[in-house]
Length: 483
Image (cartoon, rainbow, N blue to C red; front, side, top):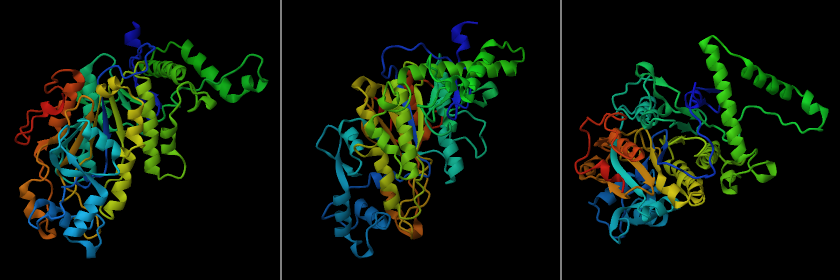
């Protein structure tokens, strides 16, 4: 058996098990060495209209879209009842938002961005943020079904179609060779699963990296001449025995042979990762590549759990980018939940948006570690399962909608507004008695399909996404998302 056929790898849920996959030889460079996509799923239905509202002027007329939107959203914007007038709307907008110009121009874009999202504003100004409006997956407003549709990148997926592969796994399979999906979450999302026998989902392309600093199997150290307890310890004896056992056995049963192969692959990967990163997170604890202090601060005790969980994923992403010559994963998966803002939306959503997009927070800290070539080789795509309804509800929140925006970010992205952000049809829908959704005019497969084409360096046709469906907004050309 040749080495390339033997070392096929995948780890599930933090390295608990593996499926065959190829591990390339380690190289000296520690940089992103091929085009890659990072998918960030915002489960719960993020309100991107809260992030990017229509700009309102001090003298805004009462019949304009901006005035009508702010009146309908006053409660979810946290505007007190006595301040729900033009002056109150403008004061909230001017204090919490920064108006955007079209990238590279002095022409107003007609929308603002939360001032707390400094890194995202920098990406916009650099022409590296595309906001694709009116994108739709499922239209059921059901969280589980709609998330499955987005994980699959397939609007035909039904509520119980769990057997289908995800779009990330299909893309990795289409790229071929040793391309893998790195799941940086506590467990791999369905989008990570690739196509297997009979078209059913398989985890063979997945590398589960729930904790990038604890990937290696137990290899208890022993220093010659060290204390006797190191040799006699149960952990040392167990790891030594297991390693010898699997190295010596030649199983005739295919299932047992597969298990033995998994152990060898896991141990090989762990050794490579440890050789590059060292042990621990700082040089004091044995790290050869330290986790930057800013990233470590994202998951310190005392922070809300979802913020800490996001920070742990940021550490995993930092390490996987540093290991791009060891782990060939051109598809990466992260997630951040808690976007189902039926109540007190302003309080709940803005802290989460800050975790993602503020200067000195998650994505900005990762961006600072990357050189320009790496930034040009990485595209970040951010989406949730659906959007929110146009008007606020009675609890200062918003309810489930359908259409939403998708954010596409990266050095290779042609930044700007795609689709119509504030269509005239919505003017009649802001009253609670006739409340309605953003109209989904572009299927998710067209946006993600364009990302797949960019990663592949050419058209993937319908091999990854079924783009034969004609649901695409007039005037929107997904091929223009990239330079």
